[in-house]
Length: 233
Image (cartoon, rainbow, N blue to C red):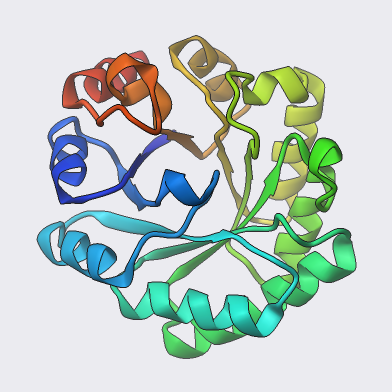
């Protein structure tokens, strides 16, 4: 199970590398759960971290396939190995697939080796976005590489507060049957690692639990906290 650590700037990226994160995920929490960072920050981190896998978030996107595909190309051009799309404004399977079809076409025409991630939300039923259990099918039918779940509302509730073990098992199993990798996130912490490992999750995404004071917005990423999490994994 690989550890993806979300960072907001080069200083945090250096801490994540020191803590031996497997994937550097560049995001901007001020703009939401999967808030997009700026191209120059992505470029700065990717140029510094040449031996690392660089993931970037396109944002909690609207149902605008053209806009989202153009933004995804910006991530790729700036130095991303993974391009991650938060399907917030897509209300159903059809809309989510429209967006991911456009993103996959854009990214794979630019570079076949870039990984495309379709990300849904465990709390989808509270925010009116495409149902979380449809994400594996969306990812598979559109040609993505990874199916992911996160949480949209960051109020202390975790992934497991919205979906139980059986639901998560079903998500992982369906994704793997489609030959997709699975990434799980959503305010997860050390206590969640045994469950995520037992589910055969491929990637676990974190930020808050490896930030000072456990604060994803105002805290800073700590190499010590990352290493403790890695040891637990």
